[in-house]
Length: 194
Image (cartoon, rainbow, N blue to C red; front, top):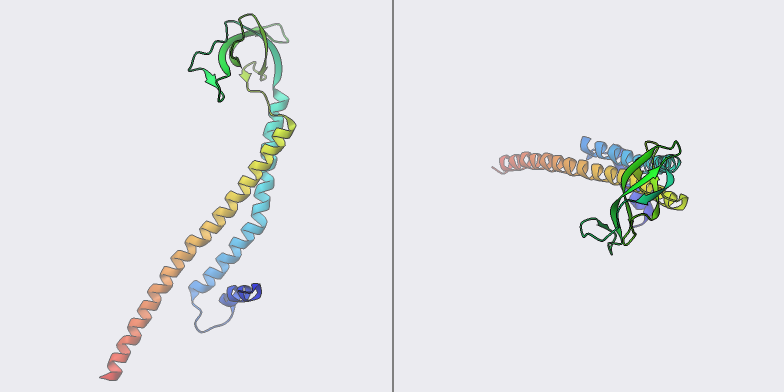
């Protein structure tokens, strides 16, 4: 099918036609609305999703700082506290002193096999709570692009799914109206033949 014939077939809903029903006009407007949402809303949602993710990750990078902490106990592989595919990091208690001289204790993930008394780098937020290391700028950019693309695809999928569901409802209404009209025509044929 040539692209021109597809466009012409889509636009028939607005032309004057004795066979055109109200459902056809509604379907035409819904199709136009869905295309506008895809063309305008998709890129907008992608840009807003990427920008929001970028802002959150930038804020995390600005709020988190690295501190040197000392292990309170050995970082032994205890089964339940493993992370990663090989269980190479375990959750242990560490102590550190912040820039004001206040001492803090918390639990952080460190390499398995690290001994008590060794120094490790942990990341904390402004309330001196241990947090994961912030993403690098390249990782943050990749995540922002991924989230933007996801937001765009969700909006486009929602618009397409909404149009498809509306079309199913409109097709049912058209079939019921067509059945009713055929019943009326059949009854007239029966009287004309008798």
